[in-house]
Length: 136
Ligand code: T46
Image 1 (cartoon, rainbow, N blue to C red):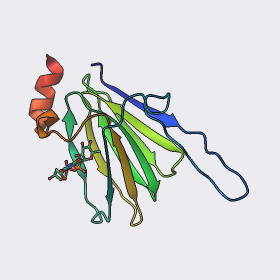
Image 2: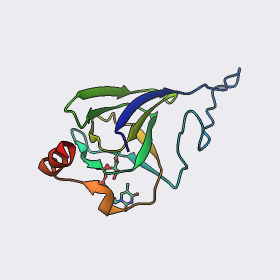
Image 3: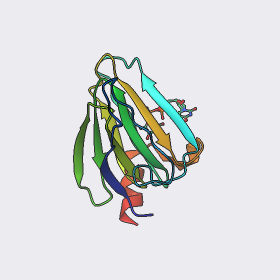
Image 4: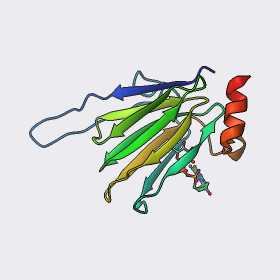
């Protein structure tokens, strides 16, 4: 699978009562079947999470409250940084992408939709191993 990182804009169903965002699996916004949902919250100030890549997992990250920063490194070494600070945007990460999550605000809740059940065998947690996989 080709590695990919893309910012996805959602269309809020807003009216005078406020906003609502509905996401459906296998849609333009969520281009995979969702098999797992998890969320990260109450993050210790200054912490950096992630520090790994996945071999095949597809994920959509949405900061549904507060803000955080996602740093990505592609197999060709290209690095990018995304600030997720509003629930109408998501970051799609597919395949071999090294990612760090940092600068979580106190109220940050990072919701993640994932294409597969949890499988530690899909993780590459060693950066040198990631670079070796990228070179293949
Ligand atoms: C990712 C980023 C964005 C489970 O048991 N089930 C799960 O579904 C997940 C996600 C984690 N865990 C266990 C594994 C560890 O013992 O929860 C613990 C913390 O997981 P981890 O250190 O991998 O968490 P993060 O925040 O560094 O990374 C997570 C996801 O694991 C990862 O897939 O891409 O969020």
